[in-house]
Length: 275
Image (cartoon, rainbow, N blue to C red; front, top):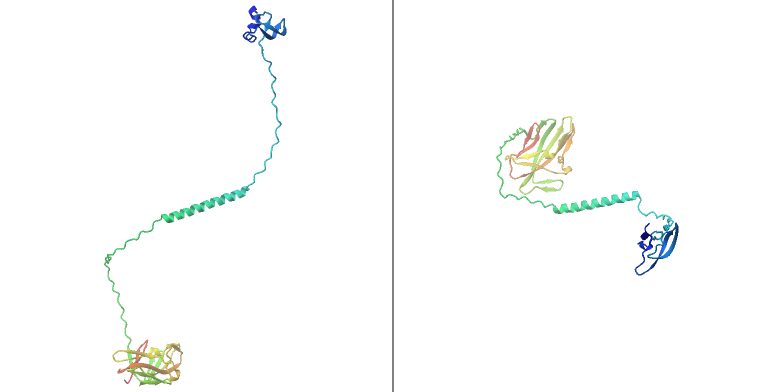
């Protein structure tokens, strides 16, 4: 080691401050012995030297804090999974209902009212049609079979007799009943027998009086049985049964050539009256 190197002051770490003559050499070595001394800057007493280093502080062990015991947090309160599922379903249904209601309201307002179709005031032109003439069947008139008062007439299955004819303006049933002004009563006594095997419907309304001019006069309903009236309401004449009675007609005056008639399936039976 050179002489300059033995000078402690040549060491940058031991160089005294400006104006100082001495400095502490705390880590010198002479003859293998370590020592500390106060030396001048120009001394050659230092055999060797080492830079002053601060003794390293022992590492400070980090203070270990014992771990705190784990704090058991209470389980948060809430719905169970099943309850959450139900709640979610209810919320979805409510949202769908609200959406549907809003759509219905909007569509009802947005739909324009139908515009009325203008009606033309011009009458439509009729289409030509081919006329079809349907032939009307011509009814074949029933033949009129004429008899005199007191004659029996056979109209199977019935036997009929017009035995008597009277004309009056008042009849007694039993009190007096007057004919209308300008009219007269014509009373005909009739007998009918059922010669068949089945019942036959019959009524005084089946008979009529016809004038020369073709006017027809219906029978008058006389419900007075003690007047020996022929039944006016329809009834059924049983096989072998006979019914007899008086039939009253109202005929205006003057009417002549009167005929007493009853239609049957074989023709119109007619008796000549004396007026």
